[in-house]
Length: 75
Image (cartoon, one colour):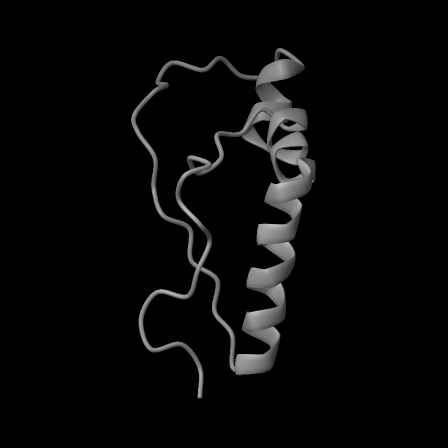
């Protein structure tokens, strides 16, 4: 939303390039999280993941870092 407001001239960006932050998704079901990770990695492989980030002016994770479950994950 912030990128949209900036692109429409509604707000001015004064800070940028502050680095990346990990993104967290929470799931209760292991089968669901496995499907989401698989889908996101497939999107990265076919370029659609990066295309979405580019469309909205977002910074994606570096391509050399696979998306994966961090920690124990759901049961």
